[in-house]
Image (cartoon, rainbow, N blue to C red; front, side):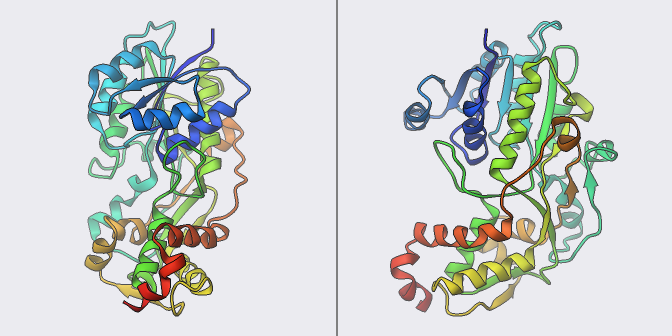
Length: 347
């Protein structure tokens, strides 16, 4: 019998691309996907007619619990901060027998590493602190409770035992066009591109020295599938529980340099009049984009050792710098700048 998998976030950016990669696998899985409504269901059914659709949302505790009871593996790619959903999924998995534990692969994010800058309110400055998920995994799994995503990370980490095996995947800045049936747009780089186009110049938080690590969405999906395969094999070579924490980076960038590259691409493509980058106040940045000061102005540095060592992960996607021109072009097209950029820039 094929392993059964329950997927959340299947029409989202991360979950949709992971689902695409999973369905490409030569291994057979019995997949069910949570969908909010018939429109979302149609998106999945048109691309994957064999997937069983489960109607509900992240607040549908009874539905989530029941599906987790039935599934061998839960691939949780929806909201990283939704406590109710995480608790319901864990409750369902805990009903598994100890000789047939349930597995959960939860999606968090390296926004969890922003806590020091957020606490100090220092934005746009560099940090030398770099976390890793191998030697320093204990530090990563015990950071302060006020850190972003920490509330749900703690629920997942506390679930480990004979009945539940957990892994947390923590991606950094994700870029590249997704391949899923729904949203194919990422967030940080497209939003920076949008703000640049709308303002008519590049934008920067403070001195622009902030570091983040990054990963192409296709490479990220390889980690999800590798963990699914390990779970289906009874755990495989993967770490689960307290040490089952996986960063997924393939290099790092400085946001001030990315701002320059975005402005340059927008200028070269004729959407803005110069490649100038301007520094904006924290308040102005957050008005342009919710939590923009954190997204582009606080440091999130890490090294993904565990996936490389245990899963044989070898990311191959093109760099974030190479992705910038296409991202700018897509944002311009999405917002009407292709036909009307002259009028919009003049406003």
